[in-house]
Amino acid sequence: MEIRWYQLLFQIVNFGVLIFVLNRWLYRPILKIVEGRNRKIEDSIKAAEATLEEKEKISELKKQAVAEAQIEAVKIVDAAKYQADLTGKKIINDAQTEAEAAVAKKMELLEDRFSQEEKRLQGRISDLVVTTTRQLLKSTLTRPDQQRLIDKQIKALGELA
Image 1 (cartoon, helix red, strand yellow):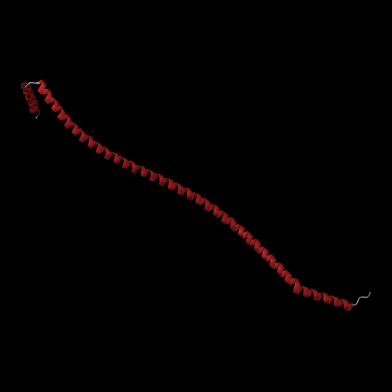
Image 2 (cartoon, rainbow, N blue to C red):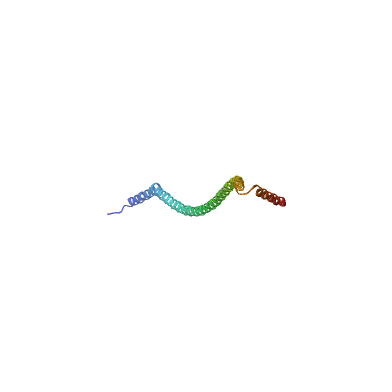
């Protein structure tokens, strides 16, 4: 078998043209696609890492916000309890004051009624005593004894005046 130089040369040129054509229209576009895909993957990884970092930051902010909200809630509840205590004490004091005023008014009315009844009873008792005394004196004392008793009482009243 004999080597033909022109065929060999033709085969080398054909192979070179094939390599050139493949390199120009097939290999470079594939490399560009692969590089683009690698860049997209790297960008996606970076974006995912950034998202994870941001998610961690957001998680921390949420934790801080929850802690602050709990502290604020405790403060609000304490303030509400304090205000409720003050309001309750004020209501109780107002009620006691009103009750004391009502009791004082009732006591005053009762004292007035009592003094009126006392005066009425004193007048009634005085009338009864006078009536009873007249009847006793008429039946037990004679007229001169009655006059002596009246004179004695008039003299005692005169000394008092």
